[in-house]
Length: 160
Image 1 (cartoon, helix red, strand yellow):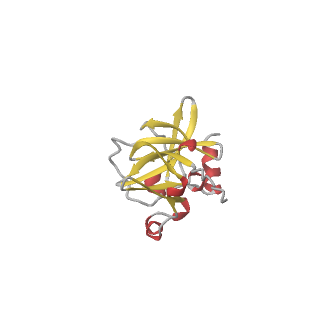
Image 2 (image 1 turned 90 degrees about the vertical axis):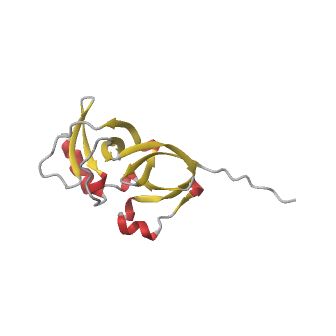
Image 3 (image 1 turned 45 degrees about the vertical axis):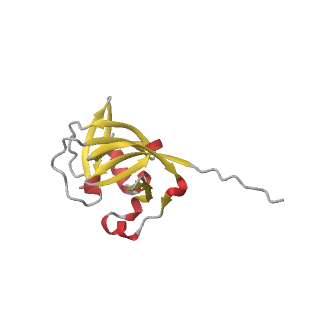
């Protein structure tokens, strides 16, 4: 008699957001909060994709612009923009996104490897995979790989 194996599908929860027309997502476990756009203080001699720092309930949080990080055209109209506060190696970092969409759920086996077409527009090292959800393609970002060790060190120095 054959024994049937039950396959447990691992569910993934992500927070979706837009940069231009493209929808991206990061694992919900990395998201600390979603903030409305606030005044961002510029920091002299910071990397080009670093927008500056914000005061978040008395704490200083560095903020990066994902459009600049991905070398996309900068959006001057930030009326719907949000700051996604994420945890990056035990530090909080803000990411400017054009808008936040929703919390989505899908299964790990529904995530496909990064197609070669994406690596042409965005450095594929940041991409965990692509998920199909109802006719939409969601690009899953790996928050831990968004910044190199050196870049993370630079951002840590903003807090002191």
